Length: 313
Image (cartoon, rainbow, N blue to C red; front, side):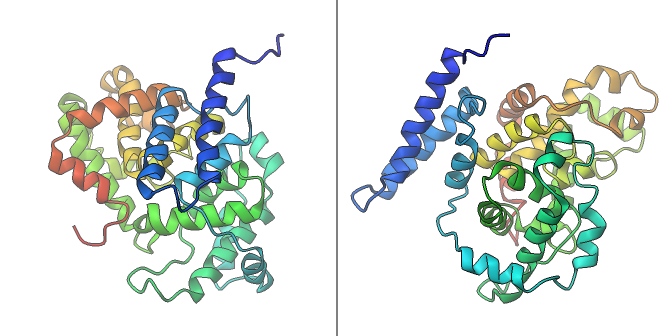
C-alpha cells in the first residue's frame, strides 16, 4: 500500500500553515481587520479542502485554538485546580465518564477516564472561582463529558485541552450546559421548525408518529453529534462547527435525517431507525447543512445563530 501523501493534501497543509504563521507573527502592526481576513481564509479552506490531518497532525489542534481564540494558557492555574482534588459534583462526573465514547478503541487508547475526570473537575473549580460572569455560572451537567472528549483526543496536552474546552463551553455554547440544558431544548425546538421549512413532508411524517426532535434528536443536539461514531468524522464535523458556529449542528442533524429520508418515510415505526443514527459521514452532512442555510427565512436563521449563547431572545 502506497504511503506517498496525496499532493493536493500536501498543498492544502501548506496553505493552512501559511495562514497559521500569520497568527504566530501577529504584531501590533497587524490590525484586527488583517487578523479577521486571515480567519476568513482559514474558514474558507476548512470548508473547501477540510483539514489534512493525515499529512500534518499538528494542524487540527492549532486551528481549533485559533478559531476559539485561545490565547492565554496558564499551567500553574490548571495545576492549582487539579491539586484541589475532587470537586463537589465528582460523583456525577464519574457516573458519566466511564461510558464516554466507550465503543471507540482509538479514543480509549489515547484518552483515559482519569484525564476526563481531571479536566471536568478542573473546569468546575475554575468556575467556582469566576465571578465576572454573574449571569451564567457553570458546573458539570449531562453531556459535558462527551463535549470534552474531542478536545482531549485532539490537543497535544491536557493543559491545551482544558483551556480550549473551557473557552468553547463558556463562549460558544454556554446555554447548552446550564442545569436546565436550555440551549439544547431551544435547539431541538428550532430543529423541528427548520425541518418543517426544508422538508414539510418528512416533518409531517415524523409528527404523524408523534416524533418531535426532543424524542429522536436529543443526544445529537446535546453532544453536537459527537455521540455518533466514527470519531474521525466527528472531528471533521467539529472543524466545520468551530469555524462557522455551533448553531449549525441543528442543520447537521437535519442533514443526517435527509440522508436517511427514504428509509424514514417508508417506515411505519421510524423511531427504530432514529434510535441509532447511521455512521456519521462528515462531508455529505456539511454539504447539505450549508445548502439548508439558504432555505431558511432570515428571522429563523437569526434565532438559530443565537440559541446556544443568547440569554434573551
